[in-house]
Image (tube, helix red, strand yellow):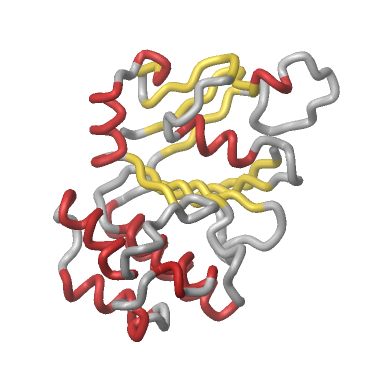
Length: 214
């Protein structure tokens, strides 16, 4: 997948509003593979909705979203499964980890399906993010910041053309946020992927190719 194209997209709930001032809603927007994007938004402007549309979890929007030349509204369950396994990864704002499983078990569930990363690489990521001592700890007993780092490692354990990051450092300090940034950029550059990150305040400290206001 080389591009994600939004044509006159707007959430149904905003469709009748005449006061929208957005770089995305009611516009043509093209996200290109290999580039980095920041989507800034105030709370309630549809940031998480946008991520849900792009990941195929919701369809309550007007307009069209294309992956290359394919309208995603026509995708069936099997097609979405292939897209999410090979082309599109996401770090959810709410993480969506399995709380009863350990940090490593959460990561290995994904990696056993995709066989994308070596055990050595995963172990190095745990070390770099300062949570190596939490690998065998149930996620329910970890802080939100620790969980966010586990969720990132899981998101990187698959091939992808685009990585969606919904407020990826909302629970992290600057130091760990910078480590996360370096890890994301390193992996994205290695495989030539695009990165789409959202923020309602603090954001990953990187030089974005394009900044959009929602």
